[in-house]
Length: 219
Image 1 (cartoon, one colour):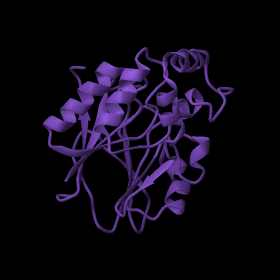
Image 2 (cartoon, rainbow, N blue to C red):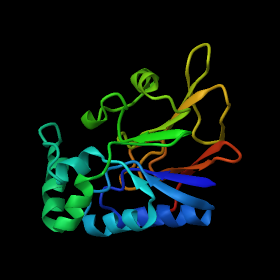
Image 3 (tube, rainbow, N blue to C red):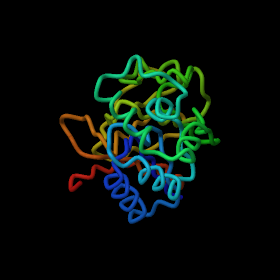
Image 4 (cartoon, rainbow, N blue to C red):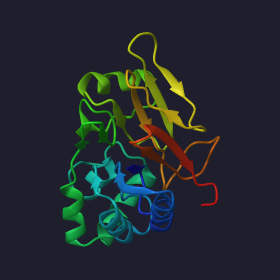
């Protein structure tokens, strides 16, 4: 099966829908969201509906937690705070309750998902580099870990011996049985990669054991 991993739609329904449609067109039989469904954008209700209708699993992001009242916005910048307040006022109680019940972590035998790092997932710590990811690998046992939150697509390879390395997102990653990996698909709603400032997501083929980054340059 091909599994698509999207992250950080941030209430941009049109961009979220474009990524979902692209994933379906490229054979995805399952779509998973790595959090921050809401925040920033103007279409929180529509974006929640897209994720609920199309994603088999979704983890909680810090903006989801803030909008649903599970965390404060003391460390949010002014734009993020405005987005939280605005989105909260736009959503129904049903939508807010759905956000509030999202899990911090989703686990399968082969992969695990969280919005930020895994050791304290409710704190939504960023994983910017290989060193940030070490606590997650010590906490989890799955071969493949997937995170969002930074809005910046990246891939880390952890061999059984030697130093971990960052991998290119511009070519397919072949999953080796004796290695462990962490992937961040970037953001479908608010990309922040200055070299590739486009929405992006991941396609994982669990039969071929390959990971492909989809960069949506036309979006």
